Image 1: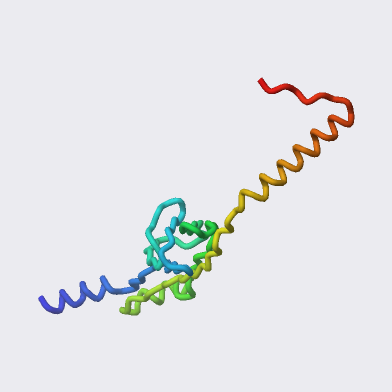
Image 2 (image 1 turned 120 degrees about the vertical axis):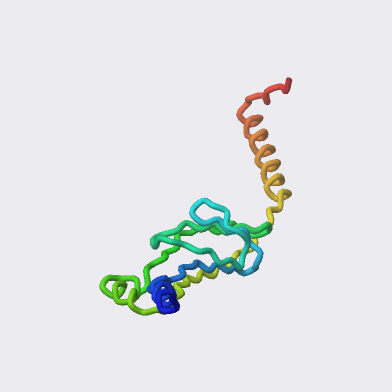
Length: 140
């Protein structure tokens, strides 16, 4: 009975691999969306099944939103014919893909400067219209 349990257990462990995407950010505490799904807050570790390109969006108040396509490629032990040989090794492998994002602070907009420029432009245009002999339309 013990031998049968050991054989079943060894087959369960054969070729096991844990696949994870690790996402960290500076500053920490940013919201992460991976392939359109909210996944949590950085630092974050997310399991995955398939390799390929992934869309990641990192957001945090006061910082610019970061949107990117990240490559998640298969490690050498997951490529044929090595993947078949890995089935014979009773050792669980960990396949981590780490991504580190540095977020830039969001620029503060000074609303006074654009408003001042708009007022100067308005005054300039009214002067031009007056010089041309065109009356300013009445406000209703």
